[in-house]
Amino acid sequence: MSDPIFERSVQVPVSPAALYAWHARPGAFERLNPPWEDVAVVERDPGLADGAAVHLRVKAGGLPLSWHLVHRDHVPGEQFVDEQVRGPFARWRHTHQMRAAPAGATLVDHVDYALPLGALGQALAGRFVAAKLDALFRYRHRVMTDDLAQHARAAEGPLSVAVSGASGLLGSALQPFLTTGGHAVRRLVRGASDAPDAIRWRPDEGVIDAAALEGVDAVVHLAGESIAQRWTEARKRRILDSRVRGTATVARALAAMQRPPRVLVCASAVGFYGDTGDREVDETAERGRGFLADVCEAWEAAADPARDAGVRVVHLRFGVVLSPKGGALAKLLPIFKMGLGGPVGGGEQFFPWVALDDAVGAVHHALATPDLEGPVNVVGPEQV
Image 1: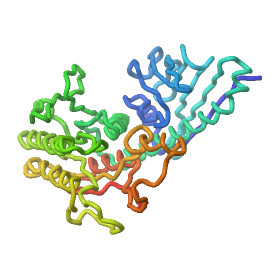
Image 2 (image 1 turned 120 degrees about the vertical axis):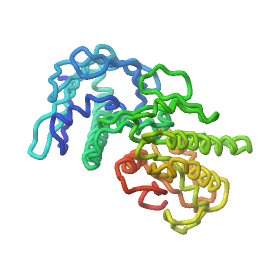
Image 3 (image 1 turned 45 degrees about the vertical axis):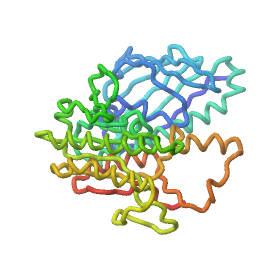
């Protein structure tokens, strides 16, 4: 029995050089890794040149495994190969080819692989692995094509973007989206860090390294205490304070700069409207009642110093951001997979939702659209 080969191609509306550049930039692996796969980068060398190594940690059947890959046969702008040095396969050689096409470029992913245990391994797991590869590359090609198209539509030029909450669900997806698009990301971090992209801040104390913000074109402020916890009075205070103090710290720093960023994109939430039942609301609606409405109103008002200083401020009122990687869906999925799921509460309430990639796209749209400001609802097109 011959070893299996997997091949899949996709056309994209950019040149082979632009397609190659997207893969060569930091964050490409994170963008291409599906949210259902438990894979993390342990260590890697920059770039795609021959000999550059990547060390991954993967989980197979719940067991952690190390996967060491090295780049081979590198042709700048045209091709690179990922070859397994040590890992879960008996052999793995993944060739990425960028070919010229009439309307742009064609990416050809060619994987020559072999499973452990030879013919027995292929008989036991061959179909399963082939199906996994098909799902993996369908996902990779869709995300890559969508990302390239979105960056091409914006055509805003490379930006330097400071991001708070970069390690959260949305921030960890936004950062690689921006870097693969050619933008530079500066992370606001609370602890000590020698990383060149880090900007120190202590939002609880209203302190931020304002000098490190000089030269930044935009700020995306996502940080805040999670609301997915039991709402004791102390936790409600932390939820409110984390949003108001953090936003005020950023806004005051931007207002004091001689050359402030062009735009501050600040997270908010559809909790601003309170419980509206089956009544649809848009951005012109007044605030509702309840704790979350109080939080959102104070949260958005905390950005006033930046707005008053002439910075374009966009408040993205997110619905529940859904991804298997985290948030509400990650908590709900295991329950339903065990057959224990059911209606939440009375089961009649509306659930404003948005998929993670669409939330990322909304942030990018806010960054790249000069005439957009004020509140913007970020929810799916259909009510459920």
